[in-house]
Amino acid sequence: TFKSSTLWNYELGLRTDWLDRTLRLDLTLFHLDWSNPQISQSTRTGLAGFVDNVGGSRSNGAEATLRWLTPLPGLSLNSAASYIVARSTEAFDSANGERIAPGTDMPLSPEVQIANTVALSTLKGRWLLGRQLMHSYQGAAWNNIEHEQRVYGFSSYSLGFSLARPDLRYRPALTFSAANLTDEREVIGAASGGVTPLLTALPVTYDRPRTFGVGLTAKFEAAVAGVLALM
Image (tube, rainbow, N blue to C red; front, side, top):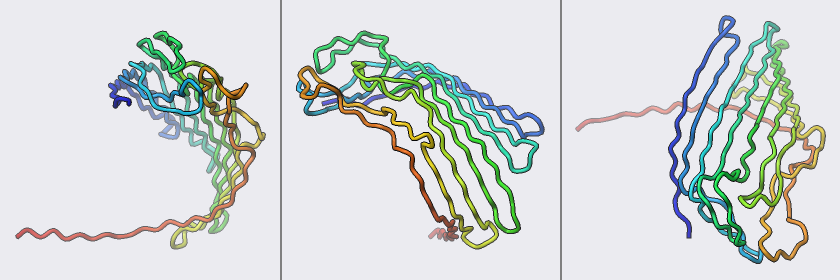
């Protein structure tokens, strides 16, 4: 059995506009107290998993976003970054009998995360052509509270192209995408081992290989009318 978790979150944010509102900077500072956060645990054999509660955790961090509509027509830059420290506040006895001390990094909680996008939109006659180059980075983290396996800690690059007719009904658009351009094989998840694991190495999950996609989209708008009658 496990308990419901509760949290108190305190935030202080600032939004600023510069250069005739073509440059926007947002900044947020926060402090989060989390009671009974739920984590995944494995049985002592490592054959099954269950949910348990860590007594408490605390997160302190800062997040920032930047958007710049450059002087070049249709060219925009967007960036987002965060620095977050998430650690346990109470001792925890894990399923394998290990005593986890307070101040331990919480699982799947990278300290640094970054996302950047360079986008260019141009109008060719009635066709709207869009191009995007995206970069993301996740700092290293641990797979579980016992810190058995490092996960994340890598960058990823993606490309996107779109061809749209915003003047037509339903605004149809044809999109092309290419994800994980460098075709990296990075660990994004790992199972817990337990005391007597049957395998010499933990089963891990890797990010998706280089992937290409094609899509066709349309936007629908529905008008809804309502009548309220008072008797």
